[in-house]
Amino acid sequence: MVDDQSPPIWEGSRPWVCDGGVYRLSYEVRNERPATRYFWDLTPVQQADQDNIVQFDELPRLDREKFRLVGLGDDAVDEDTPLDIGKTFVYANADRNQSALVSTPDRSVIEWSSGSRAGFSITDSNSKNATLKTYRYTARQLAPTVEAYGQQLRTRYTFELSGLSDAERNLVEKAIGKYGYNIDRGGSPSDAFWSLIKIFQQHEAVADGKEGVTGNYLATYDGQVY
Image (cartoon, rainbow, N blue to C red; front, side, top):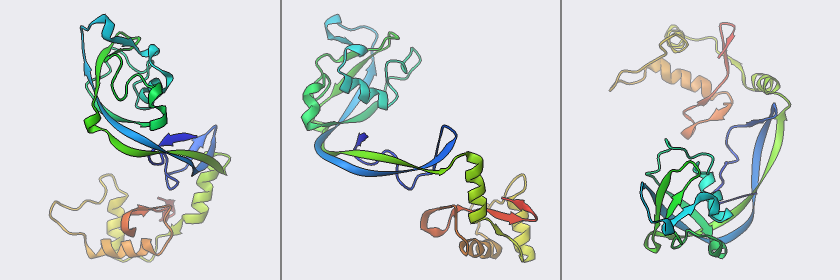
């Protein structure tokens, strides 16, 4: 279960590898709650009133988890971690009374176990209404191993790139060469480029790109799979 405004991992994202197997994730929305999105800033500080300092591990679990999810958990912050940053947190309205940070911090300077300190600031004026959704993810195994998944892809998607004109073959040779196929700034793709696009679009892409022009394909050329 994951709480967020939008799916942290989209269903159309690439497969995931876990314990050697390959999986596709899907999700369903299990709950929706009114929430508030807060914009906040951290500012590194060296000196502060002790009464205004809160140790990171003294923060409520809800607040600590928010920081952990943005890479600022207690075990992730050391003396070299940049703390001059701004981000957003989303709190369900019903949970805000569990926080020591929103809408007004009880103590405004946070100290991590590494000794790093930063002032935490937030104001109601830059908060926004939001909806916090609970997503339930389900993993479906695509293959027991990465190798098996690769074989599935080759079997399903690979096509032979043959019967090319001299211009098309020359372009392909450049594309698979050391420096690739490049178009000079201000230049235009050749006719051979567009004819190759049409050839590729006659086949199923492993992953489609925007507007059907780009994508990831598997093709056999001169006995080699690319």
